Length: 128
Image (cartoon, rainbow, N blue to C red; front, top):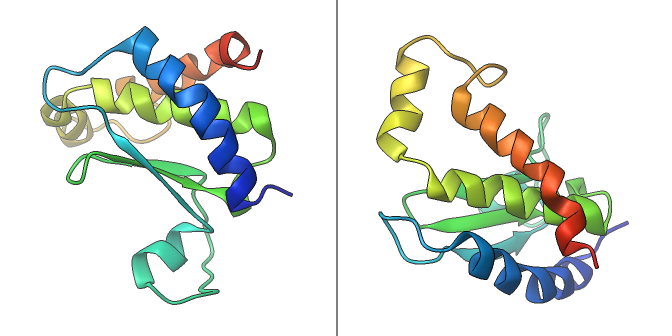
């Protein structure tokens, strides 16, 4: 099982390389990374809060933060995949992100989600 400390160590090793390779978005500074047990605990502020559909990671455009949820992350490679996925969202236009949903796309076929999912395939470059 992943712990906050293990995820933090992986992020400290890998995230600087991802930032160097992918660079800044044209909208914002580099996002910070926060590590939480799960999304429900993070949003509620209540320790040990649980819910039905736990996220693995999230990019919050408002706070320019990549949020990782260690209770849902399987291993080192998964941490890297989550960082790459959410970093791709950071690089994408927030306006177009919303616009695609307005156009009728859902999570399974949203062009930005598909691109972020594809980005996860680059995890091996950072697993060294």
